[in-house]
Length: 219
Image 1: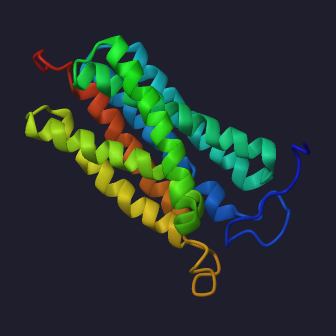
Image 2 (image 1 turned 180 degrees about the horizontal axis):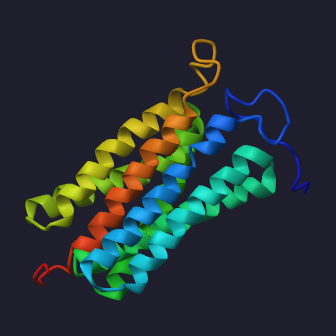
């Protein structure tokens, strides 16, 4: 496999140059800002949580990986883009199942495996309709379902997850429309996907920092 094989799937990119997607590249600063926000929020909470710190680092890695993909635009940089996102989704879901729902490790791992299978099936079924956006639909559903249940339980994380899910729904719509709108918007609208995702991740970090495990008191 040629790891340097070029990938051109965005409206803004018209050639192989490093800065062929300047807007898509620069808007990845949003993820670094989200990570800084998560770090500052954790410091204000007065406690250092290794799991949350890992999530904050992954948000920064998402920004760096996406920047690499929108500049080098090849197979290895695509992995640098996708891997931190995937790790964040599964680690955050595991944290939510343990911390927000109070599940045992065994139950949390079983649900993570079920989510993995569901993710594979959903991507295969939805890919013909929404292409690459299909991979993110399970994450959207997880935010909305978990947020809805937690809100019904009056858990403090519920409103944050619903808020993140609402922003991500708009973000995913933007990502899906990027290529179909190329003629109307030659620079594309993928940059808005970055900024809206940065907001989504910042809200999720806020939930992770501010919300205690189910059954405990908030600080």
